[in-house]
Image (cartoon, rainbow, N blue to C red):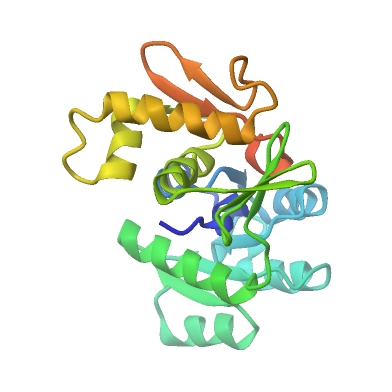
Length: 245
């Protein structure tokens, strides 16, 4: 599976319905998005935007202190960040107004979780084409586009299985990934019986990414559960909801 660097993008949700905020946050987190910030009104969202600099804004049209169209206009005065409207206003003129003002997409409630994820990913792919899929660890960096580890002046090639395992660990950076989930990522829908093979691959990965493989600081064992990859980056440090597969 190709490493999806878009999952590290920061998403701002603006809606005055707390339950909807929780639901949308959960949908995004389940798909691997690690950095989500929320606001319940226009003024709060403008303050949050200036402080957090999100990579994507998902706005409701109807807000208690204004409307999403006004909010988008103010955000556009600060940034060209992509914007998606997520609203119960399903009239054609509202949709045309939002898109005509420069919104990147317009989703009407109720919606299917899959629809939301597909549209969010589509907007992010269009707007962030030139990002480098590189992840920095304590003693090295991972380049998923080349399946390479760079450690100092040394470049080390990853095997296909090592790439697959690191991909799922990176997508869940700083979170526990169970042994079953890792076996499934590397060996498919029938992963049972591969635990010893997984341990061998983890050992070889540590030899490539750790300065001292016998005392790992990046790929650590969580006894009785699985493994955790520690990534030192702002973009993976703000997730609030733990995710254990």
